[in-house]
Image 1 (cartoon, helix red, strand yellow):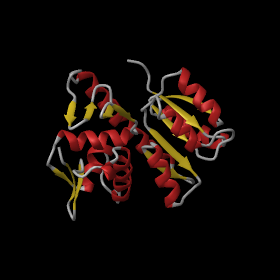
Image 2: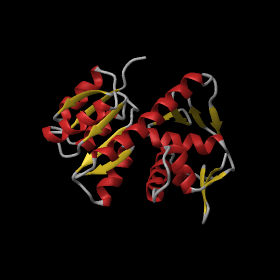
Image 3: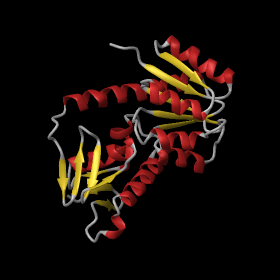
Image 4: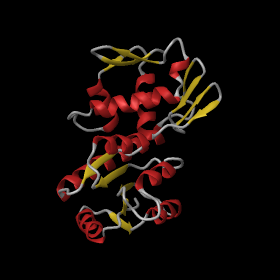
Length: 233
């Protein structure tokens, strides 16, 4: 089995070195870069299992880096940033980040979050390997392929972030079943629920927009007020 590789993208050398020291103790293989342009170049030429990404970097900021990476890659992305506002956190998650930590941070918490994301990513990839290629879900023009992790709506490709896809597949795999926000968070993020409701709702909102729910009379994703969400397949 190959080593698990993590890319640290941060222009603050001392912070990058500190993170690397703690993650190398966990047995991870570490690569460090210091600007957004280099981050994109390295991701296109090497295989990584996780990316720790600063937002305020030279040349290309972390938001744009995430947007470009998500066009081709689905490895977990953890933002590590001095930006602390809720707007910045939500923007990062909507663009496709899997987690968001603010500076200053404690290395032990970062390591715990990295380990959690790696466990989830490894388990997800194993599930994909074991999934039948023909195990697609189809609902009235919507086709979801768990093997390819693709979604088409009336033959048009729908670009979803990894978390958006996971939420959609979870709901569509259990039509008519109502999932609470807490349940969705724990199933998709693979972590205990500690106030992650807003994160789930933001992802549901962007997912609905991409599925053009506003144009449909019969909504695919229905809100069950006071309970959660269900797939109306």
